[in-house]
Length: 154
Ligand code: FAD
Image 1 (cartoon, rainbow, N blue to C red):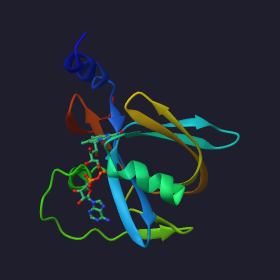
Image 2 (image 1 turned 30 degrees about the vertical axis):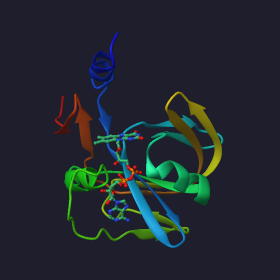
Image 3 (image 1 turned 30 degrees about the horizontal axis):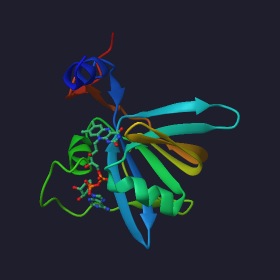
Image 4 (image 1 turned 180 degrees about the vertical axis):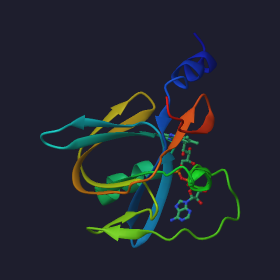
């Protein structure tokens, strides 16, 4: 089994797209991530998986907080910006929710406090205790097989 086969197989799991954001020394840092899931209802916990090479790793360790912003169908460009795929982009303005930066226009904004960090292979799983949620009634952006998609009714 090679890396390409593993990536191709994992890419067959259709997901939404999130931007994980945190703030250190009054500077907001965002990163596109689709390795996100709900972990527990009571207490309310979520998990994100951050690569060891990502700048975001140290930032979350420093702040102890992060937000997960589930992108809307019209936010593909933001996904590309926060994946480092757009050079010379416009400044992105964040809102604040309970002292954590969140992305305006996202379908869902979730803020968390880190309760645990598990290093697994070349990624770190941050468990976040949910402190705030804001929900919009709009369609999410979808990611499947390395491409952005829009939802269709079945
Ligand atoms: P950088 O590469 O330095 O920053 C990312 C980009 O965001 C830069 O272009 C930077 O200019 C911009 N940026 C950051 N903060 C701001 C700000 N405040 N205002 C404006 N622009 C800003 N990686 C994972 O580890 N886990 C995942 O689950 C994951 N899922 C992904 C899903 C998709 C669909 C894609 C496309 C990529 C995914 N990645 C994931 C890869 C990850 O998004 C990139 O490797 C990313 O570049 C890593 O970010 P970084 O923290 O190293 O910071």
